Amino acid sequence: MKFLAVILYTLRESLAKKTFMAFFVVVTLVHLLFIFSVNVDVVSGGMAMVKLMGNDEQKEIAVEKLRDGIIKIESGLAMAMYVGGIFLSIFATASLVPNMLEKGSVDLMLSRPFARWQLLLGRYLGALSIVAINVTYLIGGAWLILSIKTEFWHIPFLLSGVLIILVFGVLFAIMTFVGVTARNSGVAIIAAYLVIFFSPLLLARDQIYALLSQKIYQWLLDGIYYLTPRTTEVGNITRALVMGESIASWAPLFQSLAVGAGFLLAAIYVFEKKDF
Image (cartoon, rainbow, N blue to C red):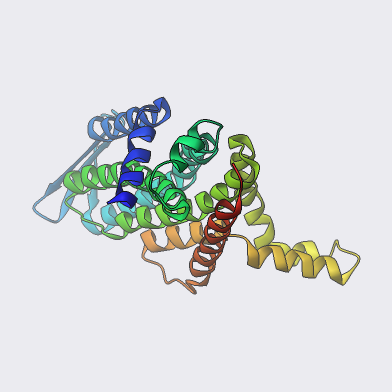
């Protein structure tokens, strides 16, 4: 019950932030755009009439081709939401840990009958829960609207939301570690964005090797690659999952989750040892 109380407290604090309300409003506007701008009428299960973004010109399209088109639309949406959702979530949650560690706030929290690991882990899970709610509303709403309008219920699009939540969880674990050590939300944001920025560069490190004069720099790049989340590769997995393409390996996701778990454990260890 104590652990749950920390999570619920973090949820209430997060919901009180205007950034989350702004995110909710933006998502609602996106859903309304889909409702009023996309018009698909299935005819006798064989043909369909399509009208998009107010275009009066209607075209007959075979349902099979229509479904391929819907999958491509959902794939594009999944990637846009993967990038946009994670960026907005990072910005919205960056202050949760540093704010808790401010003088006065941390004294109040530590005076309560919670173990330190419960306090920090509850804070982490509270932030993850509020992001999961927003992502579920974003992905689930878009999926429901498109599915009702097209009568094509494409479940893999929903699974993209799960991957978005998992990747955010990994990045927020890094932000939690930075928040505990640096106690600065700006530094936490920079750390998460640097991971995202360098991920595609590390993925293309084979091309970078030719520019390096010494082997040690190649080993350094490989070390950074294996010790940081592979957000670009997980993004590619998300796209492939929605498109129904074969996924060569789930290793980037598992490696990223392992890195996130390591940073979260490190954050808990530092928090346990830190004097306030």
